[in-house]
Image 1 (cartoon, one colour):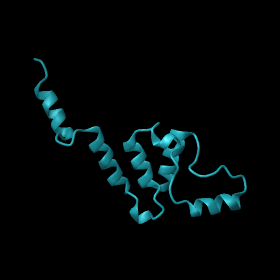
Image 2 (spheres, helix red, strand yellow; image 1 turned 180 degrees about the vertical axis):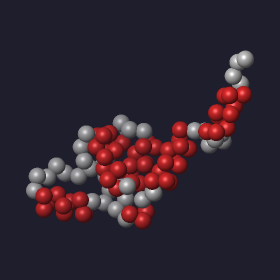
Image 3 (tube, one colour; image 1 turned 90 degrees about the vertical axis):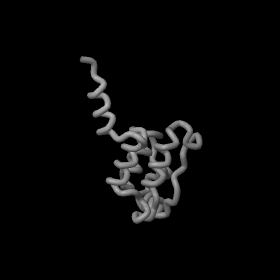
Length: 99
């Protein structure tokens, strides 16, 4: 899940969340010491919900990161109003179809 956070960060900001270091020993040390990502422009360029997802994926302690199932569930709840499930929305749209 941490790798997914790195990929999403790179896709949003065209850079990784640590220094661009050529020396692999220094890069390894920086990754191991990594605590919290820096969001260019305070994260304003990207949706606050998406920044929150990336932040949670990039938590150092893997036990505190969301699982894939949790993440998918949260994304589904963002896409769909919480009061109406996807299957209910489909049912409503089929029932309201013109004859």
